[in-house]
Length: 247
Length: 71
Image 1: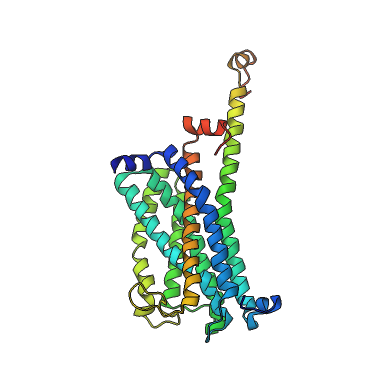
Image 2: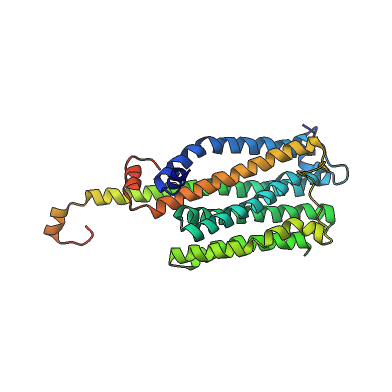
């Protein structure tokens, strides 16, 4: 167990293992995306009330779900780097922020586009949507804060604190549709009890969610690899890698 | 496929513009997420390789004679 943690803290090991994970995870993710989104977009029947506009669910829900999950990853990595001063956790936290921001952006934009034909408006300042907007600002805040410091150790600490404080927003997003009156519908997929979505729509949605998790993981590993290389560019193992024409 | 023709799939009974624009925006963001770190890493490695070649080409005895910094 401890040797695993030691390996996890070793840049060359992490660089090598993430490379071999990406070799099969990336094509698998692209395949799942194409099948999941193509299935939802073209092969499901329209919703009886919303018609075809509901097809946006296959990108809106996965991006929102993974944007939220990504925040857990970022805050956890931030906590680990604060407590144990683990460099790789700092790198993971930094790598999460732009991905989370991009996915939150997708969730907000697709939600707005879905809102127009369904609610008759692009935007409402209700609890769910506003708290998602705050999530976007938290992610962008971490990106900006990291860039604002010249001292990267201080930048890492500041970002870790910001991401931990921002955790308070996560349960608000989850519960917003139950706590406040909202245009946004409550969750259709439930871990306990019956889901309020037909199986013919549920399966492509689940596949899309898995695919978006894959996108997050791949992008996270790739961002981390770039960061590892740039931080370790003066070390022997990176020199050897570059000499060998790999990287 | 649910739609009979390509134009039916594009129009989606009036919702096509919303659905397709949402999918296109999402696709662009996903492509950016998956391609940009790869491109940036390639560029970074190429820069490192060029740097290393320069340093290897650097001959200390020659440089002493010419006394030119950064030659």
